[in-house]
Image (cartoon, rainbow, N blue to C red; front, side):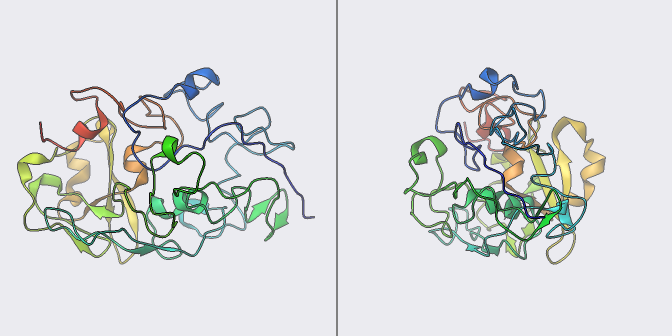
Length: 280
């Protein structure tokens, strides 16, 4: 039977872009501090969690479902928008083209993140919940990532007003020059003008790198200190970054607000930007 759930949004959803120069203490005030897990965080949809569902919701099954998923990849339960994403510029200063990808085809985790966060699909639009199938659940409208969002200054995402154009957003589905050599990822190859010495290899801390093993197939290739370099041997020439390179959606590896795996402020090796980039 089709059921409806009503979810009360009590604060901003975690975002895909980098924090704009300040930490955010929400996770510490909800009983789910950084690194403690999903309970009480902004990705906790259960009754009594951050979103406070009015009926019982499984802590995993709002996003993932063991049956009736939209795809086998991640057993994804949330409606995809059908958008094709691109940026407002064609290439980086190093000559690396900005990518284009459709969320219905790309198997990297970024496509799944955008199914909630591109502002076109209601957060409550899930494919399967409590033996219901195919219908949207009421109560939550799209959580915008564009300039039209009241929380745009907090979120720091697209400044274009269009969900499909990720203007002003750190690139994702993009190659990472692991090992100081160009990589090809999502049909994009590292530009000829990149400077190997300006990249951490591997990235510091818990930054994740992914690797493309087929046309659209993406697997985790590097998970910070948890992986020895030998385990990431296939990354050289095939490494890429996704939203979850910098954000841990399950809050197991976070160090700062916005579910970041590094600090959004400061300097040194714990500052998120410095975990990948060596420019200072």
